[in-house]
Image (cartoon, rainbow, N blue to C red; front, side, top):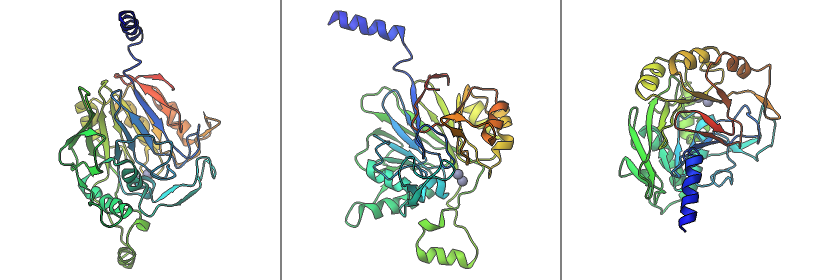
Amino acid sequence: MKTACAAFALLLAAFPALAQNVKITPIGSHPGELCANDRAIIFEDPTGVRFLYDAAQNETGGNDPRLGAIHLVLLSHMHGDHVGDLKLKAPGEGTCANSARVPAPNSTTAEVVAAKNAVLVTTRAMAGFIHKKVDAIHGSGGKPMDFCRNLAVTVPVPAACSSRIDLGGVFTAQTEGARQGVEFTIVYSAHVNDVAPSLLSKAEQDLLKADGAQLGYGPPVGFVVKFTNGLVAYLSSDTAVFGDMKTVIHDFHKANLAVINLGPNPGLFQSGAYAVNDLLKPASVIFTHVNEAATEGGKLKANTQTAALMKQVTAPAYLAISERTMEFDGKGKCVSGC
Ligand SMILES: [Zn+2]
Ligand SMILES: [Zn+2]
């Protein structure tokens, strides 16, 4: 026993990073590629806290076997490609530019929250919407989904609940017996938050259509996640370049890893290099939400907008390749899988 303990201690001393990395695994439409519709990413803290950042259109449903244990689901905004108005038909079906998807009338976000009894981390306005969808999945007679009692929880929680925080709010989740929890702060994203119309009731859809209107659910958001190994990840969601990237995300939160959504609408293909190099200044950056088939055979394609941006970014930049796990240490350095 003594020898075994000593050997283990020696092993830890030789490989201190082994037990102390955050595992980051994107799950997209095509294994081994970064495809147009890919957004969903699973994070795992060294203490075992596991969460899904934006369910998106990337799961086959709440029980997609690639998910595993999910303690929390983060929701950035109500666009269909994030809340999940469609779900994946099957991994690898369709093309990388246009994956095969089918309707998800309750949203993939609610499907995963319901299937995993997870904590939903989002603003109260968006939580209200997901509560109704989770209740619809559970059917009548069940206890309606509500906010969690406290802003710090031990995961897994006994029943799905949501975070009761808004912009600037902090929510903490830790596993039983862990000395420290994972801390989630909601930050702004310079985007819009109109809900995917197909997820609304028919009556609401008709009302909106009569006035050419969109229904917004308060501000869209990003997240700063502080892991127990010291990694501070900024999850941008869809956003334009904006001043908080320097003042709040870099100066105050000191994020050392930036996970950035690209795509043509918020313009980060044009302003992304300035956002990363001059405002966020992370140790590493991960790109996702590229809205183009960025890779082929797992390799970045040369004639893509993603490739053009990668060339301008000074920090080590990685692609969110589906089903490939990257490991980051507390300083934001990728130590495996990149
Ligand atoms: Zn969006
Ligand atoms: Zn989007």
